[in-house]
Amino acid sequence: MGRVSQPGASVDLTTHVGSLQFANPVMCAAGTAGHGDELARYLDLGELGAMVVKSLSADPWAGNPPPRVHETAAGMINSVGLQGPGIPAWIEHELPALRAVRATVVVSILGRSVADYARAASLLDGVDGIVAVEVNLSCPNLDGGSHMFAHDPDAAAEVMAATAASGLPRWAKLSPNTDRLVEVAHAVAASGAEAVTLTNTLLGMVIDVESRRPLLGGGGGGLSGPAVHPVAVRAVYDCRAALPDLPIVGVGGVGSGRDAVEFMMAGADAVQVGTATFADPRAPRRVLDEIVAWCVDHGVGSTRELRDTAHGVRP
Ligand code: RRO
Image 1 (cartoon, protein in one colour):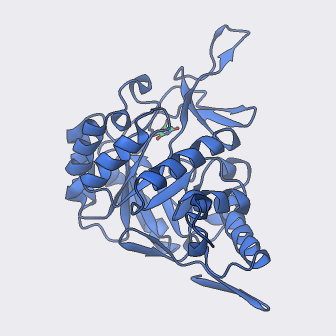
Image 2 (cartoon, helix red, strand yellow):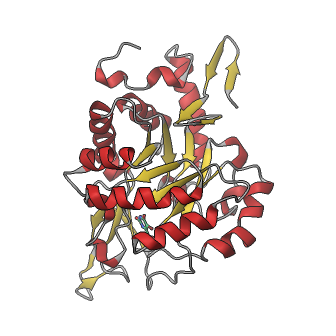
């Protein structure tokens, strides 16, 4: 759906992120739409800009003890702990279903060490049906969130360089839990990232006051949803201001077309819908429809016209 027409109006949704072109700017966020075609019974995954699958490591990963997710006042907190089948099993058992529904697949990868990332990336080399790799440098639930690659420009750059073996365009998913975000964005862009995905979840914790212990099985977790949206918008805005040419995918609390439009005005080329999908599995499609409606209402002929306008560029 590069262009959507309504009587008397037409909106061009064609979106570019680095070297890639997408039919529209709405994607499923990693970790919120499963590893495969879990959402296909609710929406046509082929109609979305892309589907980013939950972070995969080279080998199977058991994940954290339950409970793994918990609703909060304005969103949710999770400590899933990277559960996944490992990349070879995912290629064999999950990717075919995504290809069957014509999803545009972006694979999120993750590891504990630079070597882990390198191995994960090389396992994707030459695999048909994947358009890009999102390198997750910012999981809050890996070793308690204490050693995030995305908190150190040199470490983040080292991982990005090590993932070149995928042979695919790479995006770096960065963390909101640092005052070095712009520095890290510079570093990953210089070492091979075609784009940055901003941002992962905020470090958080919920205490069960009856048991007097952390509620999530993993202890702390990652906060997402409407509560974090302004944090992510600020991250996008600051990175766009510092790096005018670096493509940005905005993620964090997108529950409506207006939220997505806001991200694009801050500087995002595309957006991902995540936590909203837990309450409404059709949310990514609804957000797309609402973007179109917003553009029609405001006489905007192309979503690309929205990009950066909060920085003073005239629409
Ligand atoms: O699996 C998780 O617990 C998880 C990951 Br990999 C991530 O990147 N962000 C998040 O909030 N949870």
